[in-house]
Image (cartoon, rainbow, N blue to C red; front, side, top):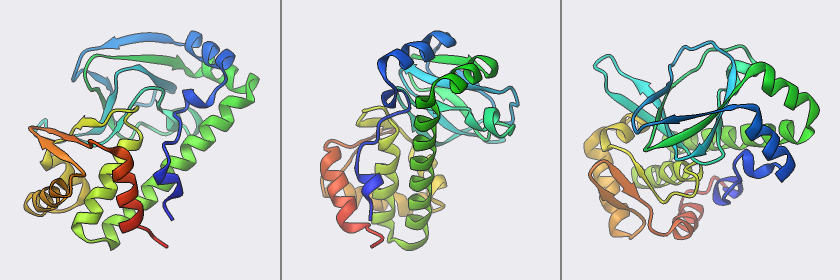
Length: 226
């Protein structure tokens, strides 16, 4: 079933009590970024946690020609960089600001002190990690098993879940086709079908989901793994 996919799971910060949220906010440095500005490079090893304080970020990879291929969006209260802190691994993607964005950058020592002191933080991070893993598995299943229309809808709805409440996000069709591993022609046909159903609206470099609850219900009914 799509229970985790279908509900709007709270962000990392939403899962914390107000006193702990204040401690987390105070532990880092608030850094402002302009739209399109690079926040982190793929391959960076410096450990630390980043939290979206306002705006949103785009996660992807810069190609050899300088093109940025978006794989996901992260909105208000979402975190990134956990691999660098807990597993000592380099960052797997490039991160850029989607519009004017503020990021709370927390160093490894500062975050580790909070982590050891406040059990809420470990529970929130574990829940966030498990939900992301579930969504990744759902997306992989969709890409392997579902028809193109249903696959596209499921991936779009999954992306919506981390968009911080936004119903519209920047996404070029070429990027989405790359993420799905299909041709742009096949993707264009699927998007037109979803638009005719009233589930999405497309514009230049942007996809809008006018009624997230209706999209959720449609994905639950048509893309269930049960």
